[in-house]
Length: 453
Image (cartoon, rainbow, N blue to C red; front, side):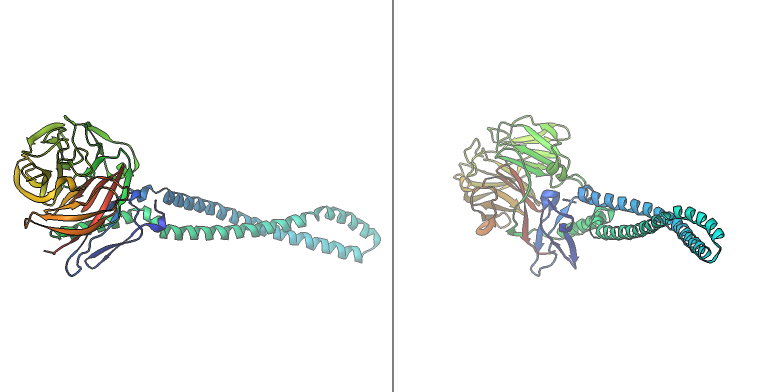
């Protein structure tokens, strides 16, 4: 899983009964991925998490510095231990030698005071020799003081080692496999919780989480909602026309932190920002046409193309921000969809479910919402949600349910942090909204009202 955070600000993930909640400041710019929250009528199985990628913690420079410092102190402590042993051994010899010198001096003094002058003179000669040894005494005293310093140094090193060990327990442990296994366990439990959820109704959208700042004012980015386990590739398309190069990043972490990517050249330029990657293929609207193309990344070939009959194109029925956004392809829990408008429906939105293999229309719904008045739109659980604009204050204010063929006006705030939305799509695997906002790639967590099956 993954992700500017300090070690003490890393999320604490908690599972309480069937509730999965997250505590701590969000910082996905550091490699954290977003999943949705969900709740039933009794508040069961609340799934909300922003979790780090599995490789993030192991790459944290400060954790490595802490571990390296601890190793250095431990090595230094071993050296001090050896020095202390040698010092203690030598100190015993020095203390013995000091006592002998002082005792000998006292004896000479006694002899000098108690014997004849002739004998005294002989001892005076010896005493002079002893005087030469007297400077050794302060040296020995200094040696003892140095020995005391060594012991104090040893104690201080032991204290530092203990402190660093405690720090490593509290913080540095986040760098090891134990955290990885815990996070992976939490991810499995989260996904199990999410899989228990039936489709629900959108009730809230989180604050935006900026993943990256790159590209022009317009574009699209996405992950494959039905990719196999372990396939976390990110797909990136800059601009809304006259471009045919798709960037492939190996993971969200790579997308966030590097410019290492593989470039795929499409056979035709795309139109708008309504592309979607689904089951290993990209679906896009061919520029200046109402043709939908399915391009297989594994073979680099067009596997299917089909005209979307009567759909407006070439800025006939675009979203309110323009940009050749006439045909918007999207995916939800029910599969592949196309949102567009026709003359037959007076320029109002038409919603069609497509067969992802043949691109044939399975069923269509006509709405009463003018396509040009919509800022952006996305599908969740068979319901089309439309925003009231693309700049400034933005909210989701219109919802059309294909399950009941009815619509309603709603009021769900959508923070438009960078003031120009040109792409907004839901990913049913992550249960998050992917957005392109004025050259920023952004994620929104969503809250759905569910009935647990």
